[in-house]
Amino acid sequence: MAKRRWNVAIVGATGAVGTVMRRVLEERRFPVNQLKLLASGRSAGKRIDFLRQPHKVEVLTPEAFEGVDIALFSAGGARSLEFAPEAARRGAVVVDNSSAFRMDPQVPLVVPEVNPHAVAKHKGIIANPNCSTIIMLVALKPVHDLFGVKRVIVSTYQSVSGAGAKAMHQLWRETRALAKRWGRYKAEQSVEQVEGLVQSPLEEPLVMAHRVAHNLIPQIDVFQPDGYTKEELKMRLESRKIMELPRLRLSATCVRVPVYLAHSASVTVELKQAADLDALRRAWAKAPGLVVQDNPGKALYPMPIERGGQDAVSVGRLRRDPDDPKVVHFWCVGDNLRKGAATNAVQIAELVAQG
Ligand SMILES: NC(=O)c1ccc[n+]([C@@H]2O[C@H](COP(=O)([O-])OP(=O)(O)OC[C@H]3O[C@@H](n4cnc5c(N)ncnc54)[C@H](OP(=O)(O)O)[C@@H]3O)[C@@H](O)[C@H]2O)c1
Image (cartoon, rainbow, N blue to C red; front, side, top):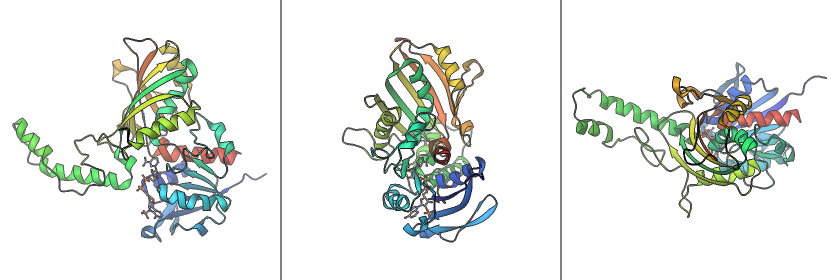
């Protein structure tokens, strides 16, 4: 029997995630029959290649989903809330990248390396988790399987591409403006003069709350009454749902860093039993979607500069806590546009296609 081919729509096809989704569908040879590229009126009529064939970007409307089997949404929560139910009503299975449906008990929230079985429970919409949560959980799952996780404390170092194409442009404009200034730099300049070059304000327009070049912004998404940001809350609640550990203790601090691509996380885990580090390294080496880079003597550890463009999450810097044998620390890095978004979404679509 001929293999089924699927009519696929990408909603937000011109954005940072949508662009990578198209590439990942090509690379993984997803059995696409027809591909629809949907975006706002600003992009309507634009031509974008898929499998070397030009495709015209269409405006997102409810009718656009007629005949669509799988709809990959990445155009923000408001568009998902409005159009994902429309797409599902017309028979499409929606894989949604926004946070709109993630905590809905009717909607599975899936990382294929962690809870692939949850896909089967869908009622038309499946949610793709938050990017930092996906990257951390790919590394955390083998830790939990071996020793049982009691508590997690995580600090993230998130790239600007996590805030979309416009945030990438902000870092680029700021870098360019600073490069012009640095043209005046001389090796014998005093610390005060260098400070002046780096710290005097830039005129560039802001997409993020603050300037990001030569800076760290300890705010991703809006603050909640308890002092955490929504991104930090997402890491806590989504991890609990995906790991099926409703009482998992998890506290996150999420920071935007002047890196274009790939999110990093420093993760501290309290375990139910003392850790055997060699056993954990062996389990990580066998785990799907994960590579181990952990040889401090050779300066080998995960770094965002090497992870951009890669599907696998990298993990390293594994240490036992000096004061508590039931606590380990590690560092993991993953491409937020790939495993943190597009690749995870296409993997979910593959699970749907496999039935
Ligand atoms: N970036 C990440 O690492 C990441 C990771 C996980 C999840 N996500 C989620 O994925 C979604 C997209 O993120 P992104 O980073 O790709 O953002 P982005 O680069 O800003 O792209 C946004 C996309 O949405 C489209 N869009 C905006 N308003 C629209 C409207 N009114 N009608 C139809 N299309 C509209 C844009 O089309 P135009 O070009 O026509 O404006 C563009 O294609 C967000 O929900 C985000 O939270 C992002």
